[in-house]
Length: 329
Image (cartoon, rainbow, N blue to C red; front, top):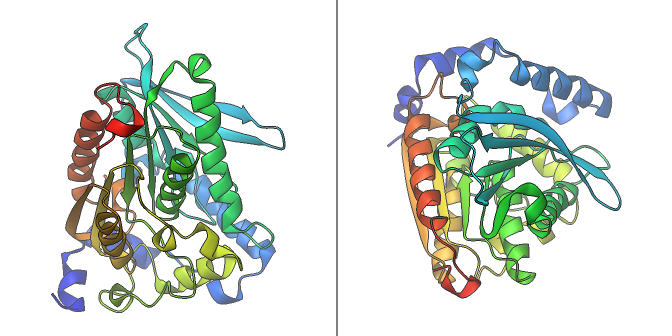
């Protein structure tokens, strides 16, 4: 399938939204301008008007903000709980939103509220530190891991079952989730599943060397210029938080969702190959015609509903019963 055919598959509404947006000059953006762009984008993503695009929350879930207090910092998290009361401890899904240097947990209310209501589960979405000059990718990775470890350690306070835990994320959030799964393995913390949606798993010097960077190349939701900016902000030690270059033996089984109109589509495909090579069970689903960030755009991209069904079914299977770390496969 050539570039023109891939682009034609993207819905007219997505292409119109992209045409109406004014892309900043990412390569020349100053730190102050980045803050301005970020704040405006996050206000828009959190607005009620944006729900037409990002989807309305499921009424079967209650949504609150909480703070995770760590010895050296406080991390806000957005918590989704099923409204149907139960005395039993629920599975935990630690989720990380996409965006890297922009983004907020609120933009993922549509999917996270449905996971909470339908699994059912407690979903904790991490409002991690956003990348900026002086705040490298490693800081965001630490936030994802530290929230996961804290909530599991304090399982009784959170009403979760520490034997039924999953991580999930989109784009850069997929990278953070994948790194959390790797660190969980090293710490012997049981994680039963990882869900990675259009993950950006290679922030190193080879980030732009994948074929999907030119075919399809720019996505309506992710111009390659944004990836260059992300690569620049990731920091000199990006290799240390690059899942695709890590030892992947004995990490949690994975579900990877890849939209085909996405410059980082091959990140997800190659990561699935690496997991299989390590002996880790993987389910890979491609979504033809879907752009980057599609699961957060149910009002524009019909494939979002199919993707959510795939995520729900995968997590229902992985979190259905108590499993020891040796039973994860």
